[in-house]
Amino acid sequence: MAKTTKKETAAKKPAAKKPAAKKTAAKKPAAKKDTTSKETTKKTAEKKAPVKKSAPKKAAPKKTTAAKEVKAKAPIAKAESVEERVEQKVETTLKALYQLQQIDSQVDKIRIIRGELPLEVQDLEDEIVGLETRVNNFKQDVEDIERSISEKKEAITNSLAMIKKYEDQQMNVRNNREYDSLTKEIEFQTLEIQLSEKRIKENNIALETKKEEIASSESKLEERQKDLEVKKNELEDIVTETKNEEKDLIDLSQKQHGIIDERLLTAYNRIRKNARNGLAVVKIERDACGGCFNKIPPQHQLDIRMHKKIIVCEYCGRILVDDEIAQMVDNN
Image (tube, rainbow, N blue to C red; front, side, top):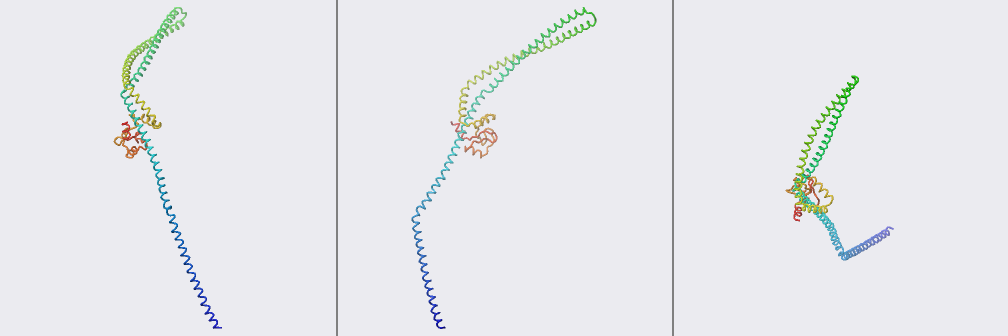
């Protein structure tokens, strides 16, 4: 039994080992072949695929970048055009304002040539009216004084008549009581006569003074009327000389008003009214404001030269322009 068992075990052992070795040997090459075949198919597919799709893939990004560049340039061009329009608009408004200031300054010069004649004529006319009213008031006072004097004289005559009447009654009195009452009435009437005479004297003095004042006022009125005639003739001569020029300048000023915006025009008129010299738009002179002569910072000067917005002086509120705008207006 022992031999058979050993032979069986010896025969069974190699039989169990060989098929295991064969199986492993048979499995390994199969795995290698499969992997190599798969890799070769993948490589061939990868080689074939890029060859066909490489051209459109490279062309696509070029087209997108070009389109992006065009799209990026379009808003920049639009922004530049908007800025140019704004600058042109501001520049035209500044030109119109400066030209309007030049026209108004010429009108002011023409009116300065006339000097204070219009004011003097107006003062003389007012003074003449005042003197005339004063003379009329004095004449009315004289009439009132003369009326009061006549009234007082009439009162004196009435009092004298009453005294005479009371004296006649005293001759026919019956007792002392009536006599005393009549004497009191006579005394009262005499006092009234004295008072009326006093009032007549006062009125005569007032009448003389009023007449003197009337005479002086009338003489002064005649002098002022003569002066008024002379001043009016001088004013008419000056006005006739500068009338046409002033009219043309006023017409040009009205045309400029139509060009400028109403808001800016109201601001211009307000500044011009408040300014002593009538200047609302001034240019920069020696790095300072041409109206108040205060120093302007360099940054403000740069902004004024850029013509991007209307800039006013920080101190006086006048509108500032640069030499370029002034030269354009002067050349035109």
